[in-house]
Each structure stands twice: as structure tokens, then as C-alpha cells.
Length: 133
Ligand SMILES: [Zn+2]
Image 1 (cartoon, helix red, strand yellow):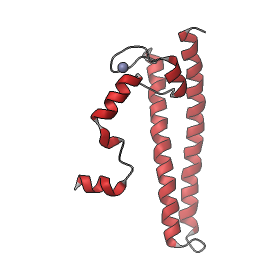
Image 2: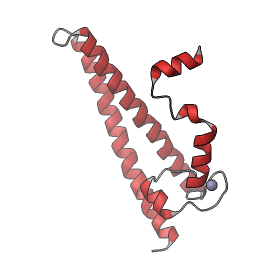
Image 3: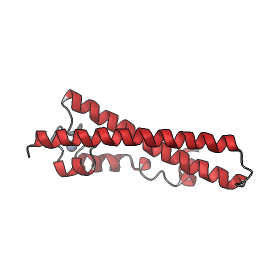
């Protein structure tokens, strides 16, 4: 299979994935609305908050991935897809097959990660808020 054929296949992967994410986001949002309309007489308030937080984190992850996929589809349209946006070298197919919306080769992605480590260690919210004070 040529690289072009492989990239076309990845386009289908991206389109299917985008559809799935859109549906998941729809589902999650309506679930959140239902939860807040029903009120918390079954669940206690603390539980309610925790669930909301988990759902909104999921929505955040899903919408981030969705925008990365939109990005990749735009790059496909412009013929830029599959090339690293930093060094312009072709991104290896194995990487694209693992992460179809990757915009950087592994070398540039690693460099980026090193130059802005706070983005990748932001999971500890206590530390993050302390750092911003
Ligand atoms: Zn690169």
C-alpha cells in the first residue's frame, strides 16, 4: 500500500472517529442536563458534584480530541496531512496509525513536551493552582 493510500485510509478512520466523538459529546451533555434537572434527592450532594466533575472532564478530553481531528481533516484537505508541522518531514505511518491526528513527528513532539512541561503535569490540580498564585 502506498503512503497516499494509507493516508486516505486514515481519513476514513478520522471521519468515523469524529462521528463517534460527536455522538458521545451529545450523549454526555444530555446526561449532564438530565442530572441537573432531576435534582439530588437520591444521590447526596457530594456524590453529585463528583459525578459532574468526572463528566465535564470527559467532555473536555473528548472535545479536545474532536478539535484535533477537525484539525487533521483540514490538513488533509490542504494536502498538509502526514507532514510534521515543525520540521515538515513526513510523520511515520506507524505513528499516524496509532495517533491519526498527530501533527508532529515523535522527535518534535518530544521536544515540545520538554519545552512546556507544565502542560503535561497539570493533572495535580493542587500543584497547578499553587503554581499560578
Ligand atoms: Zn518534526
